Amino acid sequence: QQQVKQSPQSLIVQKGGISIINCAYENTAFDYFPWYQQFPGKGPALLIAIRPDVSEKKEGRFTISFNKSAKQFSLHIMDSQPGDSATYFCAASNRIRDDKIIFGKGTRLHILP
Amino acid sequence: DAGVTQSPTHLIKTRGQHVTLRCSPISGHKSVSWYQQVLGQGPQFIFQYYEKEERGRGNFPDRFSARQFPNYSSELNVNALLLGDSALYLCASSAQFNYGYTFGSGTRLTVV
Image (cartoon, rainbow over all chains, first blue to last red; front, side, top):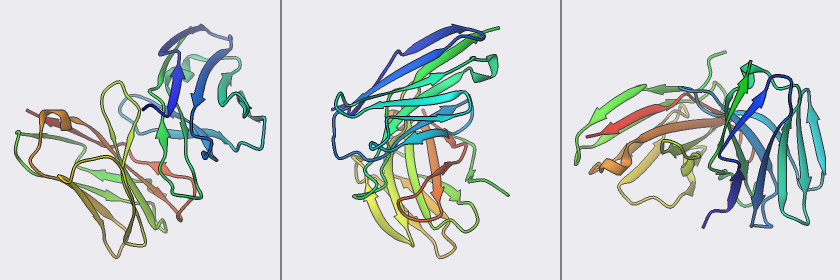
């Protein structure tokens, strides 16, 4: 059972455009929703994270939108740059019970120069 | 500051062999977790250790084992390797349980 579903699988965006990646979760016990960025040959790096009591969080060009009732959250990358080309993973965890991070399958983002 | 260090970076093993992967956490970090990332997929949780005790185990067979040492470094052992064990094995460390994790660059294991 896939607890965190991510879409699209791949995404191509023009430089300066907005990249949008969506995720849905099933377990209402999740209380922490991070996004990770992974470049080839590297491990995932935490990009931005949100708790379910917040509907939106913005850090620079990156924004998480969270819809608790729909059990969905999304990552928006504003003014997308070629350097943003990477694989993005949404994730979820129940930090009270344990610290196991459940990852989505990832989105390969390519920003056209 | 050195990040999470994993060794070796690449490894090729034959089916049925045993492998040991090593991880040195960020200085001061007491929690270490291991993840398996198959090509094209998200990382999957294998183990978590905090203060040298196992705090969590993912859905992996008993061929997988791990431990954490007094200096908080950790090793992941996999016995009787199968072709399906080929993956990137990631180690992540955190200052304490239930806190943000920093991932290493991983060990790429290929089983032939």
